[in-house]
Image (cartoon, rainbow, N blue to C red; front, side, top):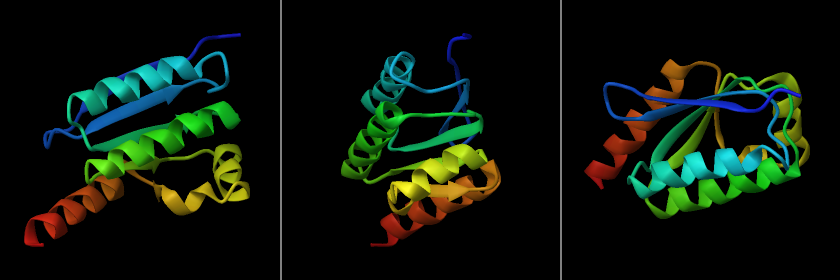
Amino acid sequence: MAGLEIETTETDAGVPVVSIRGEIDLHTCPQLRTTLQRLMEAKKEHIVLNLAEVPYLDSAALGILVDAVRRAREMGGGIYLVQVTPFVLRAFEITRLIKIFQVHDTLGSALEAIVARQGARTEA
């Protein structure tokens, strides 16, 4: 079984984009947890997760992501899921967790949502 590959880049606006390749399960989710914690410790409240190459995730992975959403929201941000594979999307729908995540077809639409949210915060 191949391990989980995680690559983090940043957009010009400083938004981290975490591209994940592989299955996220009990054995690999500590790696994802560490990545997300590091970003939040760096005060990155908006995080994009590109799940285009994630064929499977389990309940342990969902728990990590729910915790990340909670922490991001506490900082005024959010977790944005991009290019979610059908199986993974179905897991979010079945568990009804789809309601707490921002799901986008493209990186561009996720970044537009972040800009809109940041603009709404500065106007408030």
